[in-house]
Amino acid sequence: MFAQTKSLPQVLTFREVKYYIFSITFIGLAVLTPVLAHQFQMAGQIFLPMHIFVLAAGFLFGWRAGLMVGFFSPLLSYSLTQMPLTVLLPQVTLELAVYGIVIGLLREKNLNIWISLLSAMVLGRLARVLFILFFVSKMSAWQFISISLPGIILQIALLPLIVSFAQRFVSNKDNV
Image 1 (cartoon, one colour):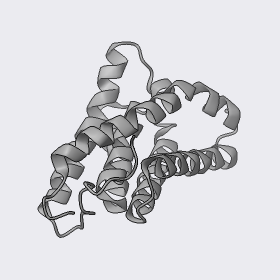
Image 2 (image 1 turned 90 degrees about the vertical axis):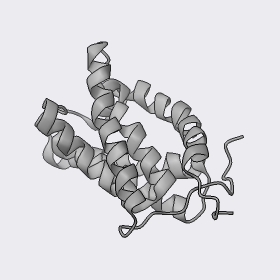
Image 3 (image 1 turned 180 degrees about the vertical axis):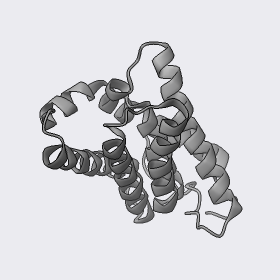
């Protein structure tokens, strides 16, 4: 149902204005969504609202957009809202940057959404778990993963739908 289709948009490069427009839009959505989630007492560590836009940007537009959205979203969010917490900012930035790079690279290899998504999620989580193990002694890796299970389930459920919906609006006619 959500298999790779010929309607995927082209991979954007740094030379294209569209690259910056889409990246800035996804960064804005990644910053705004956690603010809205917190208004409804839906903690970011549990529901991971920022992650969805990083994964979508990487899958739709390639690793460059995924990296840009993954790296700058938590930094901009922190500078505007002090979320994520200072102690979590390096972890979140690392995890989201890995998410964006991995899903974008796999998408550029024309792998389907499921392989790209699950691989990015595993490698991004692994990067963050390793960071926690080496630099944060108070929280166990399992504790971190178990807290975010609802967000992981949401990512798996929503990202293919978001990508399918977004493809209709960003596909190029010359991309056959």
